[in-house]
Length: 420
Image (tube, rainbow, N blue to C red):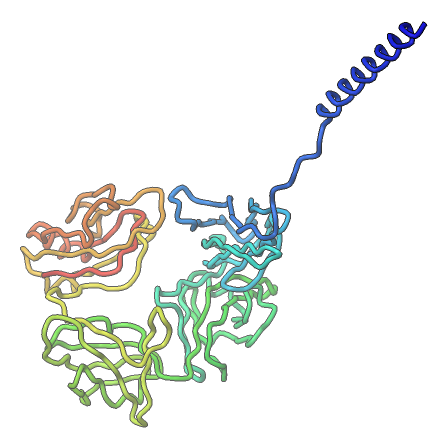
């Protein structure tokens, strides 16, 4: 009897042990919730948008003002990061997916990602919005449009006879209007003038308004209440006539190059002309003073400066500026007058930058596109800068006959043309 009880007890223990093992097995196979490895202390990363060059910069090209900037940002740690979109430094959208339209123009884009712990990263790019062909548009020079209160300022562009009002605004969408101006008498399709009233120094957006009240993007304008030199001061040729252009220059009294002070000047509100001093090849300090002792300022990448470096080069400048060439639509035109001092056999230097583009090519031809001074060169990203070629007798004859040499091609920003 006792043996039977003992056997029953042992069997019961075995069954309990077996049940415990089975329960443990199924418990270990139970599906568990995933563990989120993201935290607010993680450094944020913008995974999209990106470009294949790996620079982190990118360009949105919108066909017209009704085409939206439509894109999304992929960011990590996604649960703890806020994304903000800035155009020209102004916040225009907060969120991962933007779907907005903007007036025609070129804008600097900045996408910022900030975590709840304050850690941040950013991506830079540009937004280019093209106008419709029939829209009134501006065609600001590379240096931009500059105005002095009280003085007329000429705006170049197309379809400008449609402009009823010129709006000067602090913001992209012209909600903060500073001035609403009427074009001066004599406006044409390609040119109109305005006079800026008293306005604090700064950069403002220009917007055109037609008779029906529709608003069009028209770039920006820089207002100066001081004398400013805008162009012509980067280099000079000793002993030749030197012209510096700008705004509010009618009261200039002297130009100083290193220790040489020049007081014999021909001056207007927009230019000063004088004979460049004797100087050696290389860099020299340049400053300009008004009759009351105040400085004339220079436009630089760092802002307004009262002294800049100018250069005497072994090369003679034919043309200087900024032109992104696009075959017949955008090209540098060198007239026969500009080329008149270039002798046969001279070496011509083409200085350029390489913006992001589908391809990069250079061609120099005459105004009839009949004779190439420089046959098309493809793959300019791999060529020396400046690119040089010899000005021969056939090229000179073509320029004389047609009146111009054209620097054309695609995907290059031409900045200077010289010869030696």
